[in-house]
Image (cartoon, rainbow, N blue to C red):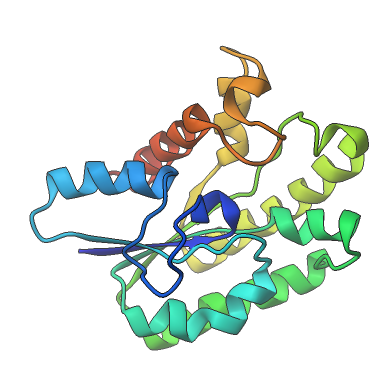
Length: 204
């Protein structure tokens, strides 16, 4: 079974060698690699997350970094940079365009890899230095893209992982600072939250 994790810096998490999909970084893909490799003797885990990516960046590299790798299971976590980039660079991706491009990704994947399972993880946000100053707009815009992701998962019959729900639940135990350094990027404990939520939703 070949697993591929796709997304932005949350997935990337310092994997470094972008030419080597087996460099899994130090975040939730690495945690899941440990679990999956311990359970399955015929298992490969790949990470093609790239820091800073928006959904349009995924589309630009989808054939090279996804379809050509022929994974059995693809997990996608994207959406926060589609919001965040608008604050800094005025280079975000609107909700309608986010949905349109994401739909193209899914359609192209099913056309090329009809037997592949897709798992979509919803973007999340927590209070932190990067998010609190514009909290209402930031959290609202991320929620809009999360809802698109949920809708597409339902439309295509895919597994959906509600990471916002997972982190909201985690914050009942410890404050946001335990789970994220800036409101977006997880701590080690935050990556564990993602890994646990993925395993629960994926049924592995």
